[in-house]
Length: 461
Image 1 (cartoon, rainbow, N blue to C red):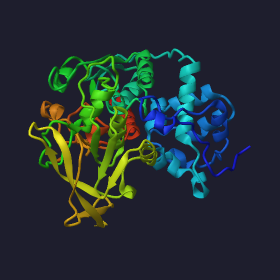
Image 2 (tube, rainbow, N blue to C red; image 1 turned 90 degrees about the vertical axis):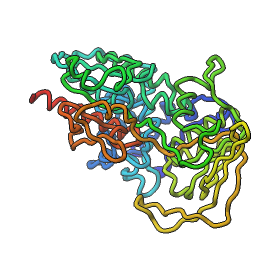
Image 3 (cartoon, helix red, strand yellow; image 1 turned 180 degrees about the vertical axis):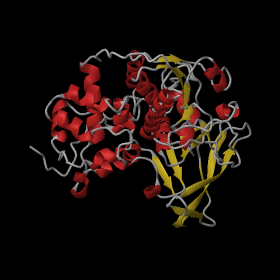
Image 4 (cartoon, rainbow, N blue to C red; image 1 turned 45 degrees about the horizontal axis):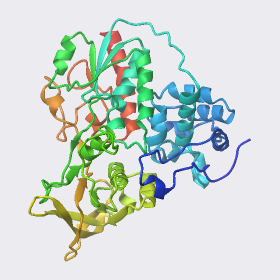
């Protein structure tokens, strides 16, 4: 029987005063009883709008119905028909702007907690079930995938299921892309990512690490090695800076470097000697999810004062509401309507402060958000020992600069058509390498679209 409660079933979380001192996962997940209760809130609509909001077309009412019946294994199998990383998506996807925003229940209350239920089904399966062996008939064709982030993994998984011999070339020493270097352990445990990757290996996908494409091999050389098609999912790892005075000072990081040192290189663990500054006060410039991740990591490294410096108001922040809420609970201090103008360093070149100016919001700009303007005479200084720039990223130019016949736009993003094919025949691309920094699920959707296009291309070649 449908539960008409207007509120989602709450998910337990670690207490803020405990979790802001360690890297354990914040959200603890549903129990089976909680999952069934939440699944019973689903109306099982005949025209499920939630599915239209999912970039990978998960059949949401179908898997939720399985949970309501207590058939958790079947719920996972239904999700995995279209989503190769359900445990990841259940944790980091912005469901509130996608599937849950389309839920009918959201008209008069809160939507069904689709993301939490997806996470539950994936976690239950991982802990209680075994992946059944799949009978895949090889088709004799080879595809190379550059990058093992969300788009590369999604593309590789779909192609492997179709019988292609797939090899992933990963620049880092560990597979996972942004899932392992960018998203902190307290939001996405690396054991979860590793389990999903092992599932791809079980399909026959080969992963070669420490392969910087454009240096060790070029795309053209990969094709010459006998690959019938190539998918570029190399992400957007080139950080942006403001170009203000003092950015070269000791103690200034890009968020990419800061998070990579912590997440991939385990700087937060005492048994690793990865160098990283652990100052008492930190300013993080930016208002997206990456800024929240960096600020919350800095707090966990021992900083007493961690400031989010953002030039607009909270309403314009691109970060997920849940991440902002968790950051506030963990005593992150928000300096809104403020913009840095200079980083101050001492005689040794070490950061001792960041000079800012206060802002006010004017008319909307091209993004639809109100444009911030400077309030004259409002300068002030925050005494900090480190500054982290979380201002977005763009694709690394290495691949496009070493590949003949491949074009990029003014932002450095690869140009593709509606089928995700680049301007070079047989070479496809997707994810952040095409869009610039975006979400995990949108990158996965691009990878899946490319896999379908590659299959059609090779069948007709």
